Amino acid sequence: MSNVVSVRVVAPKSKGQEAAKAKIARTPVAKAIGLLGRRRISPHDGMLLWRCRAIHTAFMKFAIDAVFLDRSLRVVGVSPCVKPFRIVVGPEGTRHVLELPSGAAEQMRLFPGCSLSLSSADV
Image (cartoon, rainbow, N blue to C red; front, side, top):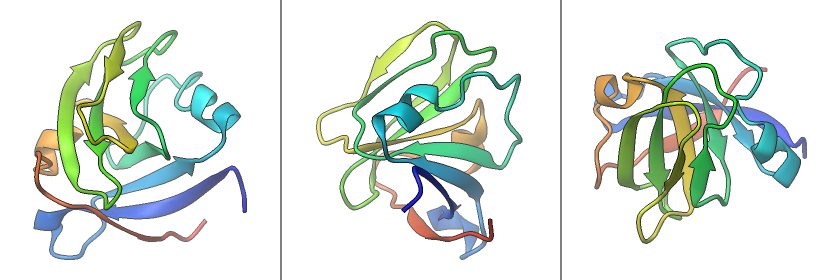
């Protein structure tokens, strides 16, 4: 399996339509690189850091929303508008972190208790 694969993230209020297209970073190197080096990300793009409890935004050029997910992809916390050069640790139960453009979590109506689902994306 590739270190980074694309998936569609479907939010609970999206009626089965794609809410965001995310790349899953599974390896330590892929997680460390994450969104670094990008000037911005599209409104419907993101990065899902698999088996990750905390994030950093060191050297990033833009703010992001961090959505903390448990093992079953249920939202356990949201940190909106995380500015560059910050460290954020997810709440108890965090297993994965979905990084989205700043404001996307609110737009997708992501809040603690709602669940996401993943489906394969055309790469």
